[in-house]
Length: 368
Image 1 (cartoon, one colour):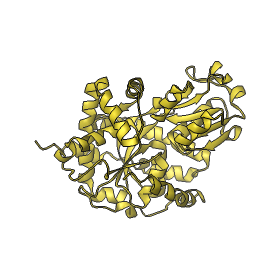
Image 2: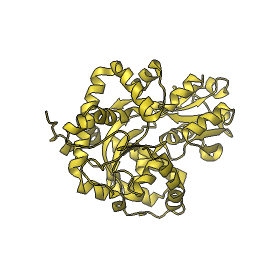
Image 3: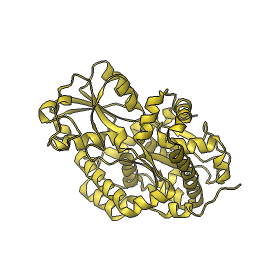
Image 4: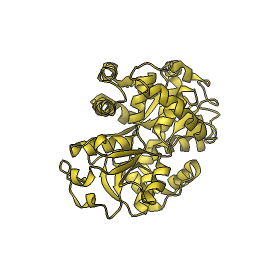
């Protein structure tokens, strides 16, 4: 069904291929073109996040069929991943054709595997956060650069931070440390996927924990407090639709239909607002086996902005998406994940951000 095991098995192989050296290139993106373009064999890669709901709902209620995407099911056509990097790893093997992940792993996919950014699912900056236990001294100190954030060099240096590395949450940590004139070398970064990180933090391990929604709300339920969100420290993070470049070029119509389909559901999301809480609670339970309270679901709606096709085109045209990707690229350089020359390559090709599929989506209409 949802091949978490496949993604994790691929992790070791991908880590060697991606991080052993600083060379670019990597695997041929055409290897990810497995599966036919049309429908029944089409597979999407998703996280258990609110921006997955439009596709999930469209498949469940038959909207996908009206947009010409036939034979899909939420059990076989939607792969669930714990975070974005395992999703990128699975792309290499052809496990899915259209993915939805954070801008940090998508940037890596664009560099190493020439993946194309075909759309923008949501802005999740307020839904990425660093939390601490209530007795952490950092919570009593205002950040020296950002007045809505907490912590200074004295209360943070030498501490341990639990976070899934090469993730949007890790980028928030980087920007937070930078605001205090600190780097990863001034703290201990422990790489854990979110479920393991929460358990470890609950058992007393670590001083700070960086998460994104919906797991972030588990932290609040345990009484842990925000130290800083992505919004607080100008760590602008998006959830992006991306695809293997060769497959995308050969299946432009399929991507356009997918974008038009999800856009119709974003219209529903934006118009109904909190009236969708029961539907969203059911989605989180059925897709990711996660129980959400009514208040947690309302908070998730509040912290995410989902985009229609027209809004995605406006955001791309503004130049903000590329600007924010440059910020993340600088983060990768500081992390030693790639070089200044590789960042220059990405800038030259505009991070493989393209609006051609969104423009095509504007010409797609549902059948009656």
